[in-house]
Length: 525
Image (cartoon, rainbow, N blue to C red; front, side):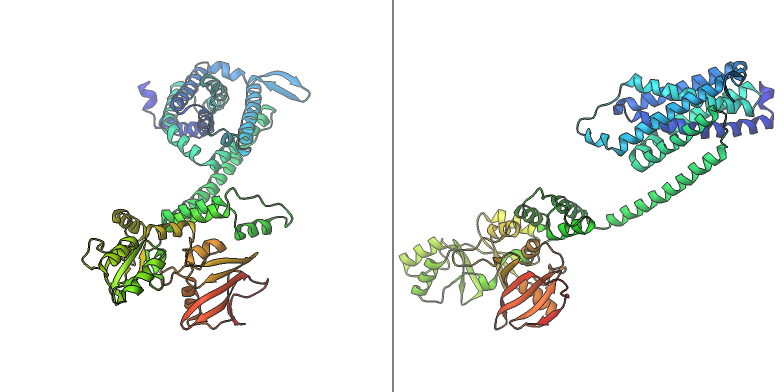
């Protein structure tokens, strides 16, 4: 025995045979990986070990009766010009089984049967899977043993090669199985390999020899193409990962919500124009609210606040009668109390308490118990931080300042709700977005650009750098000047016509679907 393994030729033959045994065992290993996936997770490793152990036992057993193996090539019977030996019958029935099993597995995956039962998976019986592994082991073991017999004359060398190759396959079984099952296209590719191998076994069973080189060349080329495909997907995933996770998640959720003019147009353009478009699972109002929630964290306090021009406030320098009239006519429960201008805030008070102090004392005392210390927030603060501040304010409004300390507006929890669900006009206000007819709206220049973009189900209206927050700001940004009444701007199929301009303020705009073929440009009406 020592003399045998001291021969360099024996070591060269052993190494070559080990490599060939591993190559011949890869298809067996792939099929074991696919079959083991049908078992519960805690049984898969055990099935792999049993399957490969049975392959080792079979190969060693077949090598032990090598003299009987030689007789398997002798014809047993003939059908016309074709004669069949024991080896031919094993290859024939093994190939047919391989074709049947690979075809059924492909059908199951292509028909999506696995996904339909994903919520309540039904696993195959352990010993049923092991029995299938045994049948495949018999076929592949015969091929491997015949290869060993044809290459090496020494039985110990054959057995050593088989043991080493099975050991390598045991180590590679779990990583290979994990990789195969994590990539559905690889599973389909492996099943296609098994179809090719099954076809070659059937052909050899009928006496038609297919050179293994052609078979392995086709498999190798397919693996190379799949490798390039996996690299392309990995690079694509890496590029996607550069985008913020929140942005990708929000985009995916909004795509699942469905509906919308853009999505329906795409569906019609891809198919029959008369084909029915599936009704979305969510109503437009629901989609708008979900979109509002998903985009909330990306917005600033400036984009949801009540602007300075719309703030109701109390001026202590006005007459008592004027202050009393203002308190009685205000629909708001909390009001900033100022001296002379909004930039001179002395406190915040409840309208009822301020009115009671005015009636009782004839004036509003800056140091009275009815006066609350104002809370300030920079206009660049995120909405999530704003919500935390409002929560701690315990029902009090928050004043919003710019970087120079000038008051830009105020915030209440109601403003956050409007950013999500849309506008809730006060008693003294008219809706900023008013529907005129099908596909046409009258929109105030102060309308929230985020809400307008959600309503129109378009993109590109919202400023990327938060330089404007209203429809008027968008028009001024696009035009670079104050538009005149009647001017028209087209954006993504929507025509925006300025209806009313007062001084340096855009008061109203008409928005409707643009006529087909209208170019995205500015024109004078």
